[in-house]
Length: 128
Length: 128
DNA sequence: ATACTTAGTTACTTATTGTAACAGGAGGTA
DNA sequence: TACCTCCTGTTACAATAAGTAACTAAGTAT
Picture 1 (cartoon, rainbow over the protein chains, first blue to last red):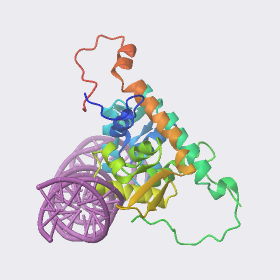
Picture 2 (picture 1 turned 30 degrees about the vertical axis):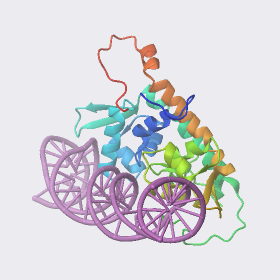
Picture 3 (picture 1 turned 180 degrees about the vertical axis):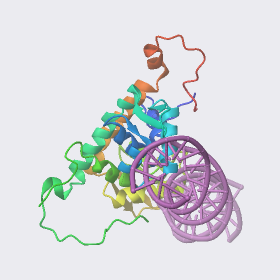
């Protein structure tokens, strides 16, 4: 096990953590589950942008890493409940810090009420 | 005039934050820059897994969002220095929490500490 | 019977990411 | 001189990840 860089307190963890949470949707799905156990379509309705495939993949991925717990009830139609494991719940601090950063630096108009700039109708955000 | 913006736990920020940091490499590049100003190839050497294209794209993306500062010096060969803006530096708490989570949940020593059940050969480290 | 619910899966298409080669000027080597 | 390396990327192309739409199958509501 060679570590050519960062002798102490290296952040090799970050890259390992990202193997679990690095997907496009993991954070957002996690975020929904922090408010409690939810069913598949419940998650889907609260995150309409995600495709059923991506949601399925994400949940399965998180489950395989012990982040979410999946419970199937033989009702009709079948009920599948997703909840966070302690391991998953503990990740909330990360999302919390991310949220805090967003509040500080992205500054929603709803939050700060600094409505004096003319807002363009077209979103200036563009991925290049 | 109205504020129908998720009264409880407004996490719309998370999705906005992810538009900036959601790329595959953003967190890792950020992490490198927390230790100080670095040049392009310096970053590349400390993160050999990234391609020059991905590194370039990531830096440019972060720069466009005011996270990193890019300075070009007309030396020969040209020197380009990347550093974090205050906005970027402030993101360190997120990475710190992520690191802390990794130490708590991914470290096999910590796993042993938690494990009270006799668990046989389970490979806790799946990546070199 | 038709349409809708549940939780997904499958095949196909599109978007993102990775790979390898190249740019071009200056300094070192032969 | 000719060739090589350093430095910071860019370009074209290939591989992988993600998105879309249709479909499953049992039950409920119209």
